[in-house]
Image (tube, rainbow, N blue to C red; front, side):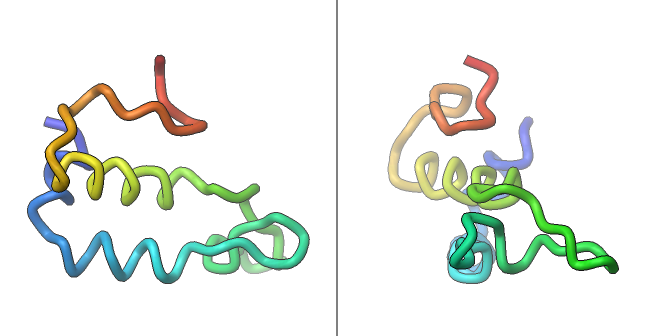
Length: 72
């Protein structure tokens, strides 16, 4: 069972994650910053897991989400 499938059953958590992992004015994730201030390109992997969780929660089949980081 993948992380998105587990997270799909926790709507408060994936909603909070979607709200927090948003792009800054340069196209980087505002939340995914390391101690030196370097950030992941948006959408970050955490954002995409939350998007997939929402997709599954809304009736999509696990493994069929086609986000930027998907394995398809």
